[in-house]
Amino acid sequence: YDTIHIVGNDSPAHVKKFKMKSGARLRLLRRTLRGRRVLAQYVHELKVPDIESEAGDKSKETIDLVASIVMACPNLERLVGFHTSYDHNFDRLTYALSTRKKLKEHVWIIGENEEITIRSHKQLPPGLMDSRQADAFLHFHEMWTSLNTLFLHSQNMGILEHDVFLGVFSRLPSLQHLYISNFDIDDFNDTTLQALPALQSLRLQDLHGITDQGLSRLASAPASQTLRRLSLINLEVMSMLVVSKLLAHLTELERFTLIQENSPELPSDALVIQPIVASSSVSFVHWDILMPGSGNDDFANSVLARGFPALRSIRSPSDHQGALQAVCRPRAQIVLASDKYSFAQRTALAKDPNKYLRTLFAARKKAQERLEEARKTSQFKVVVDEDGLIQQVYDFNGFIGKIGSKVTYTLKPDVPNSDKAVIDIGDLLDAGKESNVKDGCTGLWNASHPTGKKWWSHTERYRWKIIELQRFF
Image (cartoon, rainbow, N blue to C red; front, side):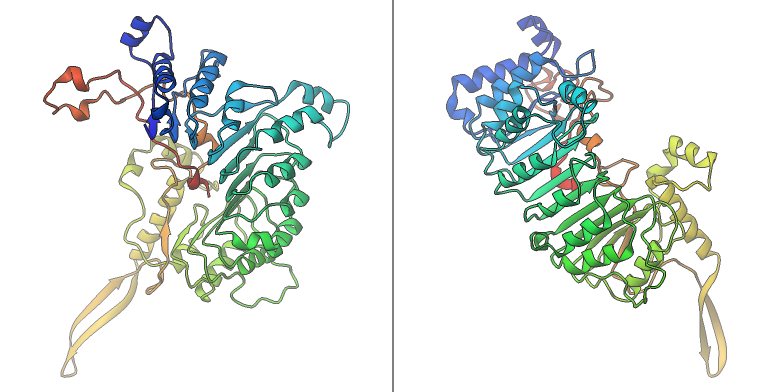
């Protein structure tokens, strides 16, 4: 009972027996946990079916049922695969989770609130959240002294104001991994950034209130010196000097991700000394600048200038000219066997082959084309002579890469079989899969059991796999 995963729809037999459309297994579980409290104390991880109603959301009845199961598990640490939107109105599940003292991770999806929306038409922020809403949200964090992973994502103009962010940070003494995305410039900005606690992992995404100046101050902040994983996604960093300062000052950093449309550039009057960017600790870099500029070349030259002695892997879906591919160890093949079946991606690429794309399929295809083109040339010759007479001449075909490099050039995604390199919040919230089953599990893998089909067979259900929140960093 340490880990309980309930996936997909109830079987027709359960529906018929208990005379209910859904939730039969959840009610049986609740009855067991309430009746046998010793078992309930062992539950640390709970997965419940993430099935949407016909209206496209989770029904209040289902949410309340899950809340009652959470309340029956005093030592619960994780509720996985079931994420609801919080619109600053009371719901039982949010309250139930707020009472679990040993909870270690939580995902906040902040939705739109009607009262706040009406208030925003009459006044400017701050102050769109009233004191009741702010106090209620902060109160949910009072008992989470063991929480180490927190996600805060704004959905459909959801608002969480600057002072509330500060209050949340001060109430979570064990916080180590923080994801913040899609908040307005008035909610999360440079001032909020400076109030971050000491963390190991930080992902900042689609936050238009963050500027180069704010990131520069973050690099020098004492609290940021413990960072091991940093992701800057769609923040549009303008200056390469900011990237250089972050990598130079964050001495514990191991993974660095930079994704944006435009290339960070050096000032026109800057004195260029290689390496421009450098880190003695970073082992993995995801570098994705969609529009061409000097950023890729600056990073590639820095790798060549031994600015990254610990670097072992580079992933760059927008390496349009192959600058980064050329500084990594040579590879014989980059395309995957499955790429030849990617009809949708082939069609998109065929429509406009010169368009800059960020898909892994397009990146692998371009990288493989560079390899094939290099093989058409002779990279060097080996001449075998004996007693001054040439006996044999061997031509060695060309390749892309640097012999002796310890860096691997990779174009594989965070989520297997995805065409996006970096995992996104949509991968976590992709509800509906469990009710729309294609080639699901029926228990056939256990068909060799001597008891027979009645023992192993069950209703066809989605092959659910847990998405660890650590993948986001």
